[in-house]
Image (cartoon, rainbow, N blue to C red; front, side):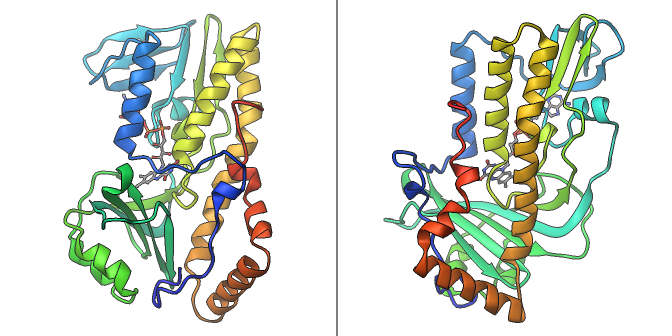
Length: 316
Ligand SMILES: Cc1cc2nc3c(=O)[nH]c(=O)nc-3n(C[C@H](O)[C@H](O)[C@H](O)COP(=O)(O)OP(=O)(O)OC[C@H]3O[C@@H](n4cnc5c(N)ncnc54)[C@H](O)[C@@H]3O)c2cc1C
């Protein structure tokens, strides 16, 4: 959608990409509850409120130290510890990320009745807003991105005044402004770029370690693929461990399969940041091109995403 006018630019029907394959909108809490239930049913013991303060890869076994001082050794240590991963730092050193010059608000509001299960991207100069219904159309998710010169903190837990969000999108069409009028308590975060980690795995004399998800390849949220990549990583890692004779061979195969794909997705998400925020002549040309291509050859538009949405780690 063109943000200021509210006019459609183009439409991608992802259901047409692969017959029988859906595209689903999931609330983060529901996905985590689902994964938790699956893990418990598979016999996993969960230990909550256990902050890891140090990772030790110098001994024969990988080990972590908890904030109470307890040391836990394990034959296989998997770091799914997100953006500020301690295990990534232990494997790759600490490389500070750089600020992309963009901040994002996120909020959930009550959804208007009868909203279509469609994700809308409203694009304007220097900003864009993505929105879609959640939980059977009872809630609406909003992620709004604005270009900004300065930012200090990379955090997921900073609140902002909803007026700041409304003012940033005051030039957008009434539909978007209606959504933003209902936002009460938005979160704001700065978008930073981290390189994809060079080293994802290591074998020790009596153990091995691996990282996955944001720990290995934090991404900008412009393709909605961060959690998808983490789930794909986990699937491939489990499969490699089940089908290789040694952890060393399994982990090498895991990194070889996952690194090229995740690097490509991270690069594509970086590119989307520019494409969404065009202004002036490049905006006119870009939107006109998308409109024409969407009308003349919607199949061609869709096929450009086949590598992304058509990939199925459970069959490849
Ligand atoms: C607003 C927003 C919208 C997004 N939208 C999408 C989307 O639409 N689609 C999509 O696929 N992705 C999306 N993402 C990205 C997605 O959320 C992440 O890529 C995904 O959560 C990464 O999963 P992860 O398990 O690797 O890391 P995380 O979800 O960050 O989990 C890391 C876990 O490790 C724990 N941890 C970290 N350090 C320690 C420590 N020292 N000791 C103990 N525990 C620790 C944390 O508490 C956390 O539970 C979005 C992200 C944001 C912020």
